Image (cartoon, rainbow, N blue to C red; front, side, top):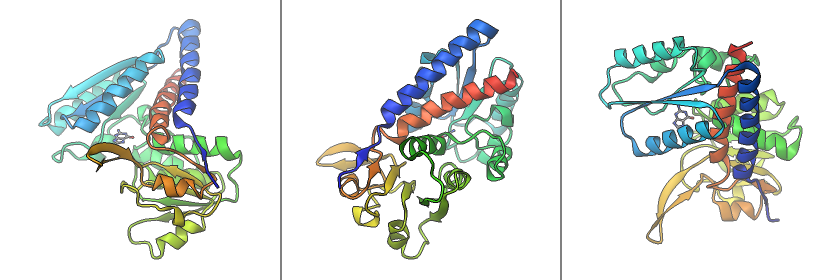
Length: 287
Ligand code: GUN
């Protein structure tokens, strides 16, 4: 079998087009322009790339983008004061603090200081609790993008066996909650899971979010299963830097029914979902 390639890049472009037309309507009919504030502390190169890309795409769909770049040694008090200002600013509908933060800052404290209604990352403890209890919440962007691709490919996910590899707060845990919400039988596997290959082989859906280059080989995949690869790992190969996922693409694509590539799979969907969440936050704020 050769897997169908799930084109996240094309899907993300469709999502952005829908968001952009909704933004145009909001402006014309209500005089409102959604605004997203992104806060970056320090100069981590990967974070700088992500933040630039988020700002560019925000503007491209017609929203206002507010970038706040702070020194690496910014104090917690100054960062909290900025977030307080953004919470109170009616032109800002979404707030994203780029992670990881420098070590002297308490990420949990900072994230939980964001107004939950503006928490477009869905990382605030209130949104985590709302998602876990099946209530209306802000849903973390990467798992939301994965869910949209799975629903698009399968229609209903009810009754499917899903294995999530990785237990991070950003991807693994919310992904498992979303799949459970769609009536999958969900297993979260991680570095201490026994017989992880066997666990994986039982799955109709595998979501790999471990951050280890090409950790999942094709012989962990049940024939015909759907593989969603969240990993974005830079490795050296043949003297060049290349991007690879957490799945060994060539061997997995030979067995799977459908698979997301890296790059061009989950990555583009994450920012598209951030824009969709910002629009949602704006619509909820304006009744
Ligand atoms: N760093 C890596 N992924 C993310 C994300 O989804 N949101 C934020 N805020 N920081 C990140």
